[in-house]
Image 1 (tube, rainbow, N blue to C red):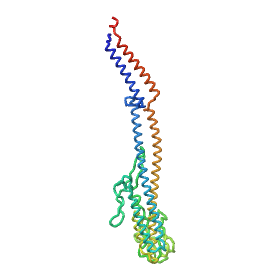
Image 2: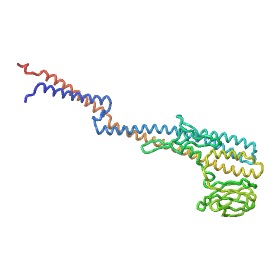
Image 3: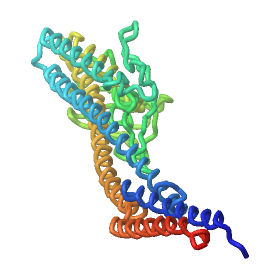
Length: 398
């Protein structure tokens, strides 16, 4: 078979081009430090690299989410701390106002200070973050959560939503609490029932602690404790049926199925006290009631007894509100600890991913440089061989 010079030339050029492409590919790997610069270098490894890169991108987003969540929770914790400080000061003022030696003028001054703290709590409840989003508005973060109505009561305009951010493939963290949960849905009394005092009571009987003595025997209903004489009483349920009677001595507890109510002082015949199922009341309504009860004139013993009873019951509601805010702040702290824990896990996982990615994608420089040297030597030899072959011709020997 006859092989022409053109055929030999084409074969040489093809071999040279392949050698040059190998050199260029190795030089690119050496310059980038990567074994895989395109999917064609290693399709299987390239797919794995893409998966590892996607995982690292998710970790970066989780880190950004954690930073934002920590900032939001830090703002909320500061706000709740301010609320706790105001509520604790209000409690001190209420105890002072509920003292029998406090004059009406002093109680009026105390009520004014409580108003200032109430307004301060509302201002804190309307706290915004750096982007103007309200912390306690639920999902309605652009709406002022607490406003004052025409009647003077505080109205909640947010919803019950709780925003969350993802901080790992399977973990989310809440970054806010709705104002309804923190400031509104607070149980009255002991959480089971609330006590009340008759508006026309003429004795010095004052409500003390009410407790559930037997949850199985307690039936949610409205009960009325009526004193037949200063030393005897009866208890009627909502159907006006007598369910208990007994004798009474000052600072003794009135008992009936499932419950016990302590009454201090000496009630007069005809005085009444009520026991009703606990409902929910917001902290602002509780403070408004406290202010009005403190400001009511209490010049005679019966008036002071009624004030002590009413203010004492509001103190329970105030303690419930304080406990709710303290509990919420504790939950915020738990979320921050969860962030710290998850970020530590994410950092460890990132190190593992980057180590794996390096083993799959990064170049072995020693091996690559050795191969490049061999490829350059082979390319040079091929070029010299091609140059010599170009000069071979029978015409030179004729």
